[in-house]
Amino acid sequence: MKVIETKIPEVLIFEPDVFGDHRGYFFESFRRDIFEKHTSEVHFVQDNQSKSGFGVLRGLHFQKPPFTQAKLVQCLQGEVLDIAVDLRIGSPTYGEHVAVRLSESNHNQLYVPRGFAHGFAVLSDTAVFSYKCDNYYNPRADGGLIYNDPAINIDWILTPDEIKLSEKDTHLPSFDQINCFEYKYFR
Image 1 (cartoon, one colour):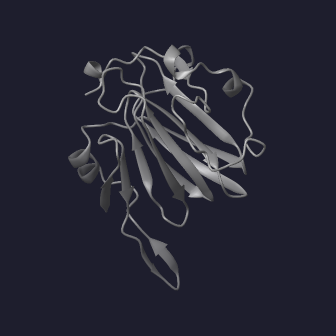
Image 2 (cartoon, rainbow, N blue to C red):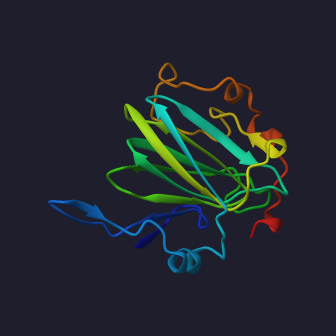
Image 3 (cartoon, rainbow, N blue to C red):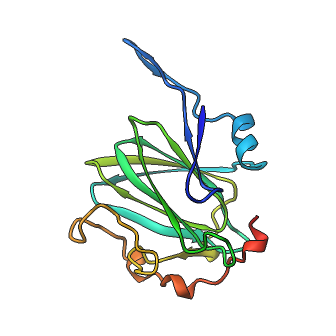
């Protein structure tokens, strides 16, 4: 498995070694020893899965302290543009984001540490998306960041007419209103 650094050092791409032949393919999708060598000791406690159609944008979501979550995400079917935004006040990459295409053909996974907002947009007809989380979801700690905030300037690839949001995601706060993540607690 290859580990690829992004412009935000804590956000990593995990690219598996895929072995294929006429029968199909095989790869290791998770190895704790490799994962922890490049991140930290993480114990995943909850797996989530979603299925969405073209243009669906889910995010940008996070869990507020003390219920923050790190996630290891992948696209099992189709293709998505996956986004991680650094919300850690005082971080050298505060306000920056990483955008990565995840798909069933590249089998890549993205590690999104605690202190980041996360979201994705579906680029294929449908997409099945998987999340491994290191903390349980707490509805009282649910938080989010509006997807089109000019302060972050994310190119979602899709046109505004193609984007489909949940009602909740249309009313999320702007970047400058989020102040619950101090860098010193997320190093």
